Length: 281
Image 1: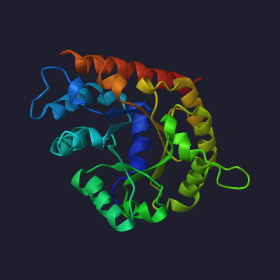
Image 2: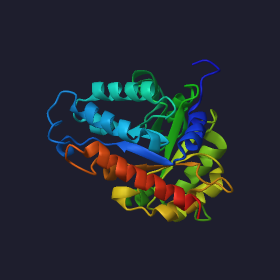
Image 3: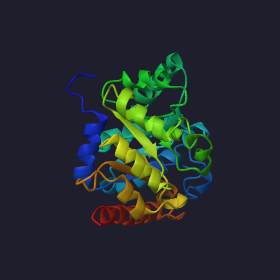
Image 4: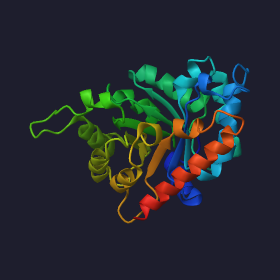
């Protein structure tokens, strides 16, 4: 990349403004839930995601394909094709590869090459459990976003993330937020994952990290409260930015019929509007 390359954070800032949206659309293509006309087709997963992207692109601030849903179906080529399509047709919308990688530095560099060079993603999700040297290789890729798991939306996240690790009772996820904001963010492109199912924790993380972007899964099928999430994650005096609030299954599978893309658009627009309204409360 050259010095004029637009960074992930710049893409996000532009998308929040031009799209007037904080909705992140996640692509979790389950072959058993695809419309019958696409099941078994060689490019069925790509076609499914492409049609939904085309139907919703004006409503979102980011796209987030989930790597495992493609890899389990031997559909990595379709994932490459999808990201290439999104980057070509919607260059204003950043693409996040949700792969949650976490390994030693030498291996992490190959995962970084996979995300940024093979697939062409603008950002990737990573697991910080092995510390900074497992994250640093991603930061060397100029302008690319590195989205660190902090307080995840799944119930089992509390098994480790809520453990007290200091005499004053500081939980692990708070320690991760501080490291990300104060020590690790050498590229200026780190973001954090904080689940919508824990709005109180979102607020605590926001207080630590300032204007750092947050990727927030957990609304839609996981039941996170939109109003509580937006209130907790908002940047002071800057409504409508600062968060990529993800919905996947609720949008993707709004209909199993031939109208699946149009139905996805209806749910995406309703969700986008609800996020907008919450930001203005």
